[in-house]
Figure 1 (cartoon, helix red, strand yellow):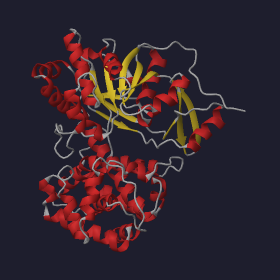
Figure 2 (cartoon, helix red, strand yellow):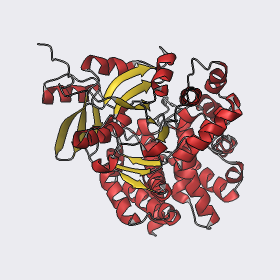
Figure 3 (cartoon, helix red, strand yellow):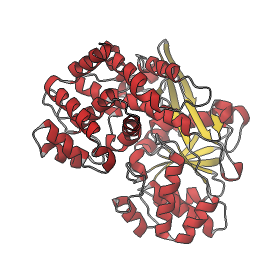
Figure 4 (cartoon, one colour):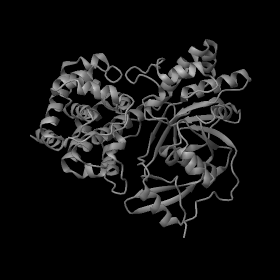
Length: 483
């Protein structure tokens, strides 16, 4: 007997007030849930048109289900299933870019939100500048009616609203980037200036780009997850998303004409300045998550919970927090940083969350500057040792070399993968590999790359990884700290 597909309920479909770029698992496990809960509480026209910028996979999964899907909370004591109906439609940008521009230019749309990952901003992560020579940016400047990038869609949709005498929308970045709103504004204005300086001036004067801090661990959905949801609910749901119970959304309250959902009714926190919260999260959570991803993968751990179950890896992140990360983090008002880190460790240990180290390791060249290197720079400025951070950077270098400790191939997913592999392969000695990778300015600012303390620490860590392996290197580092 065929399992029926999940379908939307008979409740009235809300009018569209949001367009979201990048409807991957994180958005569906996070922002869409907040919006659903707000509309259930007080209504409002905050239905979402989602836009896939690359392929039809999510549209094809959700369309037969009327764009409803199951949110699965993976708690240690069992899973909870809730149907989410915030999405009204999914557009596939390469199939019909004009339809996407039309949707964003609709004056009923008050917010365009984004989860497009770090690489979607077409910027240099080390400087924050727009890469005008990026292939998508070159294409979009020449093809205003058929952009490819999120920036192209944003700017050309805003241009239509300007031409039509309509107010702009608020651009809401929900990606793990420091000052993500300010970064978005910077690259949008740079693109707009390349189109027309007066357009950049209008956007700068009238649009809004609030920064946000988002937090919820969301593993990739597997076929086993889909089968489990079908067994539990009686419906096949190819768009289901799995996530931990915890969630946190901190948002700067700066929207065009104040138009926004009351996400605070679903637990979001509106603040004047999000910077302290995002620094806490980027360094304490994302920094250790990436560290565990690279070291854990090299050590043979498939998921984060397995890595943290290793007592030496657990001790490693404890000392990384206590000695190197937390001293660089200004605590947000009311936050206890050591308590926050203890809660993070408990989240990492949740056996119901199968968050793959390989998944977290993706796009490391875009993530390292924010998650690890900014912390490294602050430690060096303070004269503080960086053995744990240096080991995490060295593990990334070992990982992007594309060969694991057993001599097998690593499937490195990174926009700079070929350049990183070439830099590593061109040299045999570990110290020479490190030196070559440090010359890649899209990752390492020249001042940091040239710092002798940093170079020495990373080189020593890399040499140990090559000679002894990740498990032994982590064990030795923890033992040294205990002496």
